[in-house]
Image 1 (cartoon, rainbow, N blue to C red):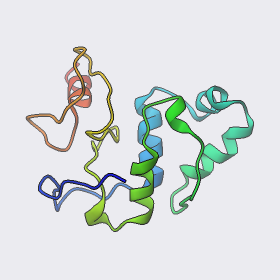
Image 2 (cartoon, rainbow, N blue to C red; image 1 turned 180 degrees about the horizontal axis):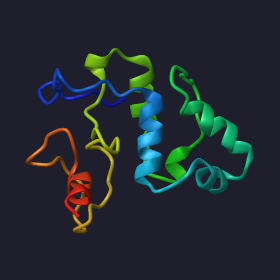
Image 3 (cartoon, rainbow, N blue to C red; image 1 turned 60 degrees about the vertical axis):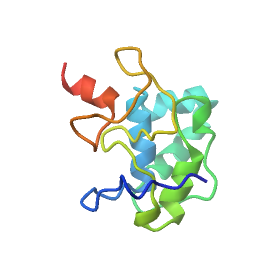
Length: 129
């Protein structure tokens, strides 16, 4: 399990809940629930996906979302099981964490923005368009 770097945690940062994390990662991948369900194996997954994005619900097991989009089950578990001060640092727009490899719009690996520590370079570039 990955633990957050407490030196980078901001006290004023909002707490990201596990259901928010799933939705943020899905949106960042540009997928609807229906598209994600299809990619996972069909309509049978839709109900599960809607449930894991329902505020207040936490699951011990979830679909292998990492097979379809950048997603960390470890991050989900931390958000669901650990107190907020032990949550990993996540981009407040897309849910990216520093342990997830994804490219930003300039083809570089995503990193933390130098101008806004709450977002990643991918989201910073998207906002600048």
